[in-house]
Length: 57
Image (cartoon, one colour):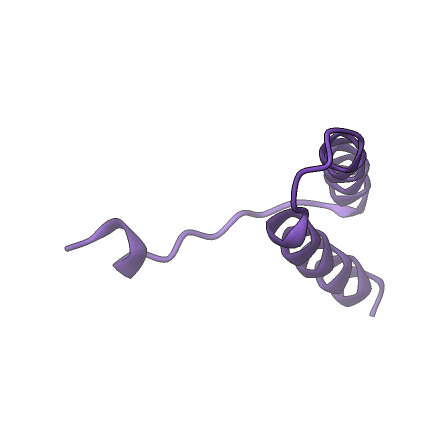
């Protein structure tokens, strides 16, 4: 069994998701300052924003 074959789930609440989004935004800004590509960080940020939207519903 490969690592990619195993799905892992994380249970978080609304305040934790806000903290994760803040940390990912800081990391994204650091990548931008260093002129590194941000595609992977952007993808993670989109996933976190979708989770935040689900928590509100």
